Amino acid sequence: MEQPDKTLRLDLTRRWAAPVLIDPKNELEVLLVNYHEGKVDEKTFLSRLLHLTVYIATDNLEAAEQARSLSPVVLHWNDRDYLAVFSLVDRVDTLIHEGGGSVQMLFKEVLDQVPEGMGIVLNPNFGVALDFPPAKIVEMRELLRDFERT
Image 1 (cartoon, rainbow, N blue to C red):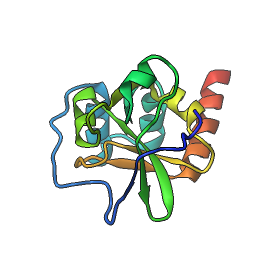
Image 2: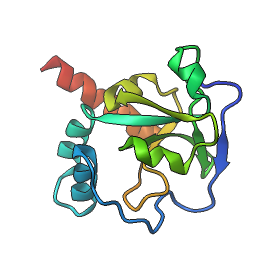
Image 3: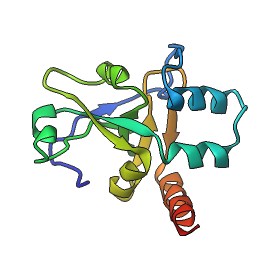
């Protein structure tokens, strides 16, 4: 996934999580809540996350559907860029503008395509937001390779 020239960049002056509580609607959201509550350890969380569907927010849904370009929504926080992904298609609406939408992918596919030096934020603007800085992306790619070898 190449980072497009005209990517929406939102400067966030606070962390991703807002005081919005998520009522879990799918397997990923139940996993997120359990992880935040300490019911699931990090390794289990990450190994399950890799095989679950996420939704990438995009500024130009028409172009994304025609596979011309993804135009992902990229958030900027603390001098880093983060690709915005969501656990449920309905949650994408918090970041997109008219003409935008979402593209569905497995989380492991997102990991393969996120550019070097970019992080991922899962569910920005929600109470169980979770960010993966670039160093964590590298670690998760290693974890994915280990799983694929076994």
